Image (cartoon, rainbow, N blue to C red; front, side, top):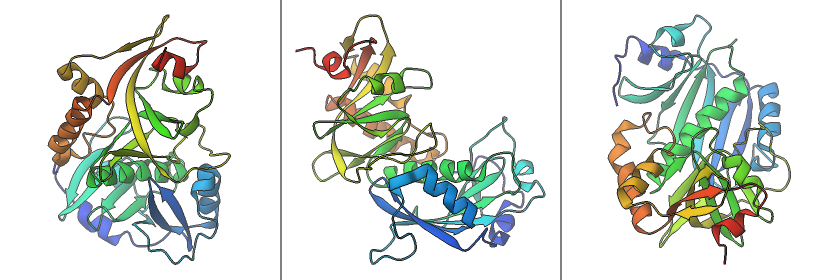
Length: 302
C-alpha cells in the first residue's frame, strides 16, 4: 500500500502518544462497538451531539468487549502532516510507515495498529478542520475498512428501511440521493450519505450509520442489521423508470459509487469481486426518480 515514501512519518506517528483528554465514548458503528478514547470533554460533547443515539448511554463502562478501538492523540502543531506528502486542498492518501498502514490528510493521520481493530488518530491542533469532523472522517474510513474485512464494502449512499428491508440509494454528490430518500414517505432513515453492506451467513445485511450531512442525529436509532433489498443508482428524471443495465455497465456503475477505493488499493480486487457478485444476484439497478411521487411507487409501480 506504499504510494509515497516514509520521510520520517513513522517516527512522528510513534511519538504521537499524548491524548487530547481523558474522556471516552463507545459508539455503535455498523453493528460493532467502537471505543473512542483520548477525548477532551468538549470533543466528547461534540460527538454526543453529532451521533445522538449511536453513543451508548454509559460511555465508559460496559460488560461487552469492544470490537474496534480508536485512540485520539495530539500530532503536534508544527505542520508535519501538511509537509509529509503532496496532494490537493484536502487529501486522503494511503501510506505505509514502518510497516503500519496509514491514511494521511492535511491535519490528521489515521494508523491501523491491529489488523483493522485497533487504530490511532493523530490530530494537529489547532487545525482549520474542526476536530469532530476529523474524527468523523476517520470513523468513515474505519467503517469502510471493516466492511471489507466483514465480506462487504462501503459506498456513497443514503439508506432507507422499508417493511424491514434496507434499500441503498447510491450515487456521487448532487445525484439526488437525499432527495430520493425524502420521497420514502413511510421509510426509516439508515443514514443520508454513507452506506455499508456486510456479508451475513446467507445474504447481505445493512446497518444504520451515524454519519449525517446535518452533523447531528436526532430521534430514535435502529441498531439491528437489516437484509438488503437492492442498491439503486439514483438519476434525477421527469418520469420514473427502473433500468437494468448490462452486467459490465452495472458493475462499473456500482463500483463508481464505492467509498474510498483508492485509500485501500490492496483490496481493489476483492472490492471488484463483491460488486460483480451483487450485480449477478440482481441486487443492483438504476432508478430514475421523479419528484412528487412516493419512492416505493417508483421502485414497484405495481
